[in-house]
Length: 470
Image (cartoon, rainbow, N blue to C red; front, top):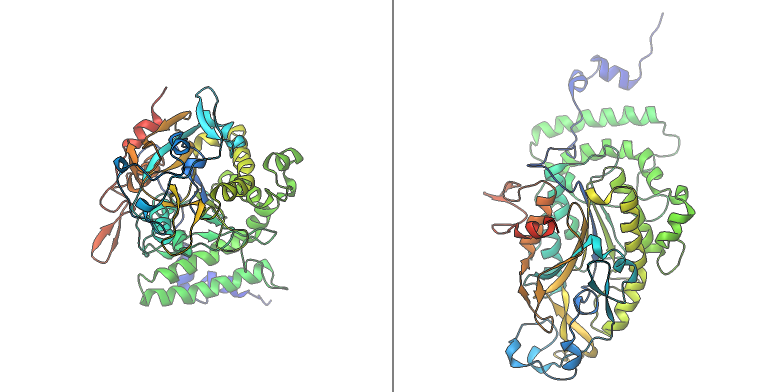
């Protein structure tokens, strides 16, 4: 009697490579216990690339129209801007109409009527600030907690600290519209192990590139190949301990093998009901692209993905929120693409019981100036606004926070944060706290020191406001 063994059977039997039989597949994204009970299990970041104006969206300033066309009164001081000389620029009024919504009476502009329906679930923070007035520096501040390149992204830190509840999908997923002004550093793992970097998810039936097996490759054949490849890679890793890119590759092969079933099912939006498609505006050309991202975000957190980032606007295509030219028209166009899908996402999460455990964050890398875009470089637009990192708005919903409230404020013209200022380090410390992580304990050794997302700063005073019961 003859017995034929497959390569995989040979390896695992110990007749081939004995070490493989004892080798366990290590999953660096396996779920981990938080430092303390969390109110948020996952995050959906809705990032408005280019810097949306707080003055046209969630921070009404009547003084802008009273001062329209005049120089800023000296009492407001001066700031450094990228394209404008502040003292030489004139105040630009706001054409948007604000009104109060919900039981809370929170004010929202007419750019966001669908989002406005959810104000009682939203906490608007009007006093975010940092010091990066260029896109690259500001994007890194908001996404990496530091103005220069090389630091891990927020999503990477969260996954490093908590892992994922999904074994078949990446823990940190990024959906872009086009390129990013700072490049991929804003979703990279920096000096953390490479396994914690963001995974790009694309539109269509093949959301992740190079995932589909080659023609004729059966599941058994593929498993045999991966087992053999893993054995050789592990032997190589023994001689190169700490080679995080190789460790990440080993883990990614196994994850990719499992994703071959999970990813196509995830991307199949045809099973969503007509009512859901209508709610998000999935079949509307104006909203369809961002709607698919928002709907995919819900499907991802529903399946245990820890951190999801949906980007609106990019360096190509139809532009972004960078309102240097005709800021009002720019924001009308961009809000028309995003308002309905965002409102639908909040409705959908709440109806499924997911909003309580999902922290939704809206914002961009900075706000816009109360003065028109200057002519420092010979250009400028009297209807545009320059970059303003000194006081701007983000909002949060879900994740155990109390909605229907405004936290902090900018001055009378929206130039600086003056009431309850929240630095980006404080924002990040608070996000981690809501997820059960002590930001001072989430550290990683690199180049002779312990690094953390919040560097040597960060306060969680914001959490007390966010979670205070009415």
